[in-house]
Amino acid sequence: MKKFFILATVIMAASCSVLTQQPHERYVESYFMDFRPYQEIDFFISPNPFTGEYTSLGELSISVYPAVLDKSKKQGVKTFDDGLYGGVTTTLVKEVIPASELIDYAVSKALELGANGICNFRCEKIYNTEYTRDGNRTIFSHYEISGLCISIKSASKH
Image 1 (spheres, one colour):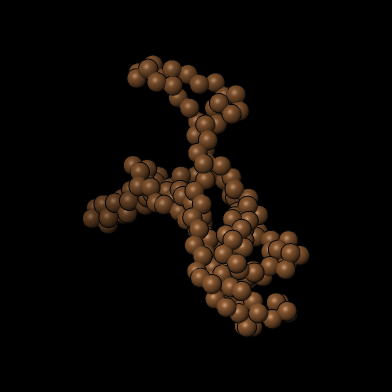
Image 2 (cartoon, rainbow, N blue to C red):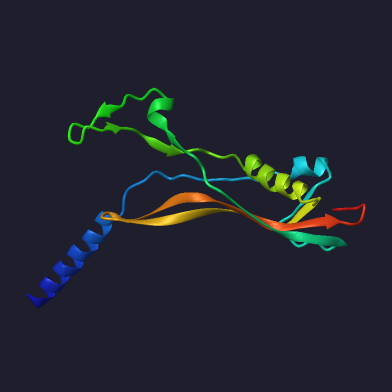
């Protein structure tokens, strides 16, 4: 009887942990930051340190927070009165920012400072953890772009 009770407890505990996981479809996320257009204008970008002669101009740090859009107004989804509080229910989504736009922010700022290159370039997605009754979930917050703005001295930048 004791073994049965232990076995039943283990099975119940294991089944409860399965209930907290939410089913979801498989998804693959890819984010390509294309540096080729900047090579054409003779601007150097690399995630690695620059080994040639350069003058360090300063550390660049940019945070980009996507706009929160009202999807119900934008795509013609009907809004309705919630019946309890008299408010209107809407659907909010974060805007999608293409990688090219994020690089443009960094290059524009570097050019403004007199740089012709950014080394140690990084662009990261920052997530926040939200604790809910059904478990934890991570929510995309913003992008963090950073790098060292440099003025390359030699004619051969690559």
